Amino acid sequence: MRILITGADGQLGTELRHLLDAHQLSYRATDSHDLDITDKTAVQRYFKAFQPQIVYHCAAYTAVDAAETEPGKTTNQAVNATGTANVAVAAEQVGATLVYISTDYVFAGDQHAPYTTDAQPAPQNEYGRAKYAGEQAVQRLASRYYIIRTSWVFGEYGHNFIYTMLKLAQDHDQLTVVNDQVGRPAWTRTLAEFMTFATDHQLPYGIYHLAATGTCSWYQFARTILQDRPVTVKPVTSAEYPQKAWRPRHAVLDLSKTLATGFKLPSWQEALAAFMQEIAG
Image (cartoon, rainbow, N blue to C red; front, side, top):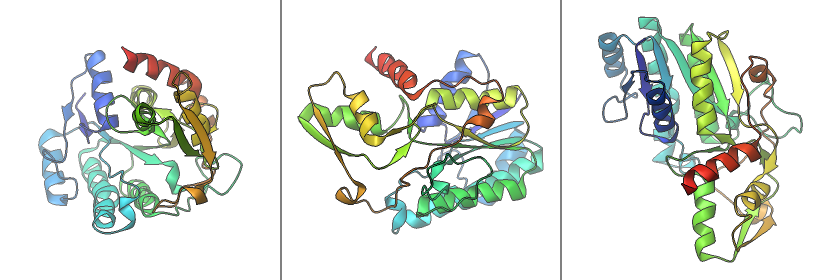
């Protein structure tokens, strides 16, 4: 099986590489230096030469706030929308199955019920709009695809909320974290496992949601992360902690479709505990 990973040096791509290595599966790993996904001709040439059968499309621009203004806005569109369209076209030309990672930011986050896989997207920031454009491109241009929406991603390889909290706790005795944004954290380990689960078990093509079970606010998440540290975590509202990009207030992904496949999802507390133990050595 010829496997191609885009964005292989990123947080998720690195996790996926380690998972495939553990299963002794060979793959071709690319980053922006090896394959510029914004160059349609280069992408098609690469795919034609390698003839991948599975493409794990992890390449993404994830600087949510920077995406609101130039030059981030242009880069965000080029990578997440145009780049994804280029990958979808090339995958279709060689008959490959495409796995595209999307986000809860495609939703407005203004409803209290979880968002199902067929709920109507209504992104409220530039990052979400570009990722949704990527979803639309995959659906329009590819016939064999999995779109996996995820949220609040954390993992060992790269920057994320957990590392930020742990670092801040080293130099502060009090931290403020927003308490009016609710979602589901997702460990890159679980996400990588489901990506391979979908292709290995040849699940029906379409959209899936992947995150840990249970919900929390960023404040609750931070308190649990820092429960053994000598630091006080204080809740604040989003209005008290303004950011350039709009953040969904309640973008909870419905996981029922994923659970129905038989894939086991940990609770966010279980995933966090396992991750913390891992990075502690």
